[in-house]
Length: 117
Length: 112
View 1: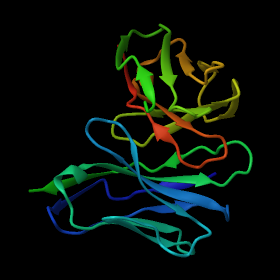
View 2: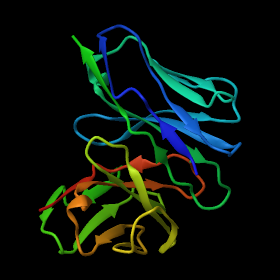
View 3: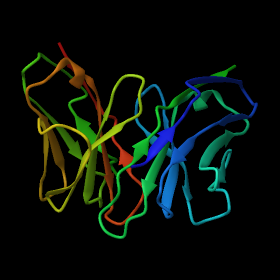
């Protein structure tokens, strides 16, 4: 079974600054995907960024980038130039690779990020 | 292109009652997964449907059941409701073989 741990329940950052959200996971799988999802106060969960475990290069999406350390089973999210709209709950999630049926997502407990004006 | 939709938005039930939640997947998606999100927690996987069959199941009792229709929409049924079933129920759709899941806005279930 896989587990995802987000040990920081809350973080706060000043607008325009950079913040890093931490995530660790445990798995015996070698081929898998890692995700960061954002859930704003309006509730709808949206995908922020995705990393394939077989790729050594860290994924980036505009102001969002990850630091993927496979050996350490660490997957942190860096948000640059923080904006007020980044205020949300952020979830780290794991999905094992499957050639057949789609796999389930295993989520961490989430971290509440507040961006201060 | 409509995304994932869920109904109703909110629901209040009493202990022992039964409830049905509904989900319409994003256009073109054939797989529906259901998650339960307790307040302040991450979503927990309930089950997944593909080709009208339950393909995977999480650690939830048989009181939780589901269905997928030929148009790929899905229902989640919960019988004999308990106070602990109060949560946000999220539906996510995907295309079989793809790793990205798209989430709906959720149904907030309150059990009194």
